[in-house]
Length: 355
Image 1: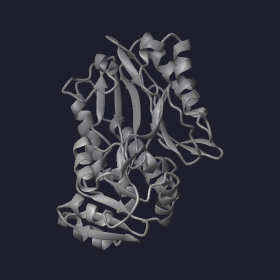
Image 2 (image 1 turned 90 degrees about the vertical axis):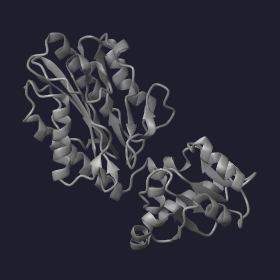
Image 3 (image 1 turned 180 degrees about the vertical axis):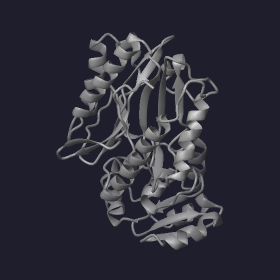
């Protein structure tokens, strides 16, 4: 484990008058102990002097070989019983993530009575700012995603199904070294392109369809998230105009992504432009979010965002316009905030491509 992560967390715990902590979120466990088990496959316990990873025999060999600096490994099926035995030998409060499910909270509250204190985004806030290793991994994930899009675009044609496109993306990923897809790939064509999260179906691509593809890859545990909309045949003047509005709105949003910028104002850069062009009611979702170990991390860029963005944050910029019964457009890039301004990590072309 990178020492500064635990040092930063302990300092934050001390500031919140928390002596101990139990961590169950799988992404937070990976961040602190390089543990990549599924949700519910263990926990991390932090005491004033030690950090423990508690998991079962399925992960024993892997974690022993990693020999993560400073982490004591405990192998058991009774994760929370062992966690409680450790924590009941300590004094003071025990912090836990407020995102924990109620059933798990009940178990912990019975085993560690009258000591639990909920902490909102304590670890997640440290994950916002990426270090050089994290940036390198995300940069590679973005590179692979961009290359996959350009490769697949060469094969898209009328009569192909949305599922065919999804399969081509998956096949490219397997052959070119990515870990896995970031989420179920979105492929929405024709009238379905007005569905912001339209899963790929057996619908065939028709002449004149807009096609929106939203996907990403993991690389070294870090993710990418990119959306492109293109046309197969001429989609008509109305949709071409809407596309240009989205493209210009995204450009304004990305240019607003500088160190110490207000997340709310970054979102507004695109939202206000789209509204001024008469499409405000056709853009209902947030403008972006941070990415990292998880596909959706804080901060979330929307009109109610209270956070600022800072250097070494990596965020998406993904405005869209969705016209029911006609079609929709979304353009999304992953953007690194640097001391010199925004750097776009996803390099696939964004001008409207008509195949």
